[in-house]
Image 1 (cartoon, rainbow, N blue to C red):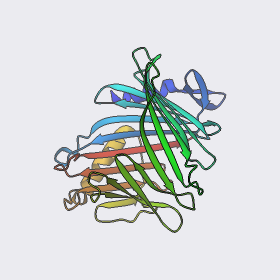
Image 2 (cartoon, rainbow, N blue to C red; image 1 turned 90 degrees about the vertical axis):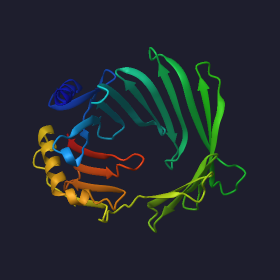
Image 3 (spheres, helix red, strand yellow; image 1 turned 30 degrees about the horizontal axis):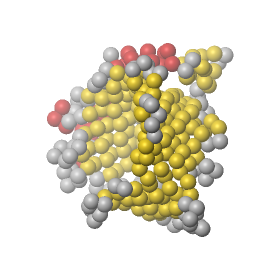
Image 4 (cartoon, rainbow, N blue to C red; image 1 turned 135 degrees about the horizontal axis):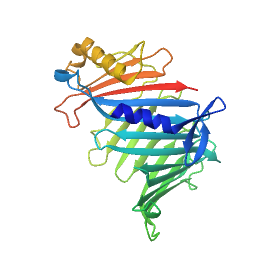
Length: 306
């Protein structure tokens, strides 16, 4: 059933005219440049031959990636969700529309300056017939005029209801260094500190809660992957990327790497297989079942160029 839905979705979402391929966005045809299909599975080693499909997603985009359409189907809820993104269409202004089973639910707006720093963002929520706004959250960003170096950016957010009563929701301070890198973010709940390498690439972030200031945790964002005991990545050749063949390939790889994935010295384990051109990716992610969000998930994506 899931495969039939995906094929029908592609059939009705893609139009071929004059030797070119288009996808439809709100009644308009957009020239297709890239198509990505993704699947998310759950698994258990005791019955890993029976993968359970959680959801699938298809993403369409034009050549500049200024218009992107994402269609997600939940195999659990039997519902589909559509997101349409219009990126930097006018003076750094972008917005996206989010649909739930065909009904508009959210609209997000953002605007960036010439340095790609966010200066405005807004979220509007719609319920019922998708024409009446029920809640909104608008955030404004500006440099602190009291600081001569202008290295503190202030974010002020207002929440509103259907009657447009705007109330201050929260404020956030964003600190920059002389290279215009974000070094620290502070709000009334917590703070985040950023760390960079000598090439100005972000390598880690550290989060602190004001209630437990000494118990921050660090998230590494290595630009170049280095295999470790709990996180390994390999170049892999995928011979056939049809849905059923993908499932069979995953099962084979699960059994071949079972000892690695069942190394319970690791709180969580990542195993990645990526094609030479990086257009096909398979990521197997296992967390300990006794952890708070312990789960075993598999992500598979394939990108086609047009």
